[in-house]
Amino acid sequence: MKIITQLNLFEEQELGDLEKILMVLDGLPETDLFDKLESKRKHGRKDYSIQSYFIAYIAKIVLQLETDQQLLRQLNMNSQLRQICGFETHGVNLKNGTIKLVHAPSKSAYSRFIQDLEEVCPDIEEWVSSGISELYDLLPNFGVNLALDGKFIYSYASPYGKQKKKKDKRADLDADIGIKQRPLKNGTVTKEKHYGYRCHLMVDTTYELPVAWRVTPASEGEPTVAKRLIRNMRQTTMERAEYLMADRGYSGIPLQNLIEEATMIPIIDHPRKWKEDETRQYLDTDVIYNQSGEVFWVDDKGKAIQLIYKGYDKSCDSLRYGFHPHYQDNRIFRLKRCVEPIIFNQVARDSKKFKRLYKKRTAVERVNGRLDRDFRFETHTIRGLKKMSLAVAMSFLVMIGFALRKAKSGTRIQLASWVV
Image (tube, rainbow, N blue to C red; front, side, top):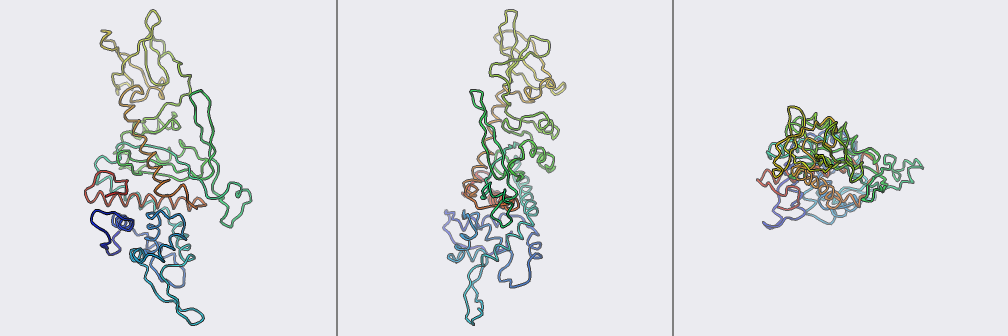
């Protein structure tokens, strides 16, 4: 999106906030979004272009400003920021005959732009998706390993305001309460209530960049929205993806079947519904297993000998297990996955491969952390699902734009970090 003149504002090795804005803008792909926004403009003065307002929104995110008022204050104080955005100082004739110098748009003008931007939020999401598609072309291993997670984002409004059904923008009529259950080691479960929204996010674990997302009220469950994300995955994503990592909140037969139908292998933590030391017999055999996926053979004396994972047999959809070499027993046991699909995962739960892949899931938690810390979702002032969806989409647009700029220049590491 090359719509401004590049400025030489910084030293070679320094990466300042204004240069970050330039890099984001330079990395974004082309779009027809501005034509749609232009058609929404009402009659009246058009002192500044749609692009200028949009760059100002980008600047608000990069500069980590929490309110529109903070952004307008920065624009009035910082001439270089105004130059990047394209806001030129001009005189406005007042009713008393005097001329007032105006450096930046008024609060009402900027608010009207945000309202128009909310209406084209699906187009912004499509813009982000086109940037993600470019990353698939630039990075051969992008999208191979994916991770799922849901993140609560509190509403700025009080939950009691919803009961009043006010429509004066102080209440949040879209937010609701979501409950997060956390099982403890002693067997009890704690419940946490969150009022607001939930961002359901799928990321690439190698580069820690978003691949797909959905913003919903907090009450919508993670597995339910995850099914929607998977069904709506682009063909490029499905062709590249091999593994999908998630925590135990996503454990369930319907979602697991959907993931496997999409030709991905689920790497999902077990739900821990059994007692810690409970085992079950595999059909009518001398083999038993626990919920962690460990498999044992029980000898005539009742001693349980742990078996070693020998690989997946695709021909019969079974997991192969055998004895440790020091037992000098070459028998192979094939455990059909259909007996207990959650426990008998396509990559065995007790294998080193499963543990290695599951550790990659922390990538999505780091992306969630950046949303809170770098994109200020811990201290936002947003009410309403439209505004929240817009804020999340714009944050990902900035994230993808910056990553694209670095990827096009040959960088293959730290694409999600604000460093050169």
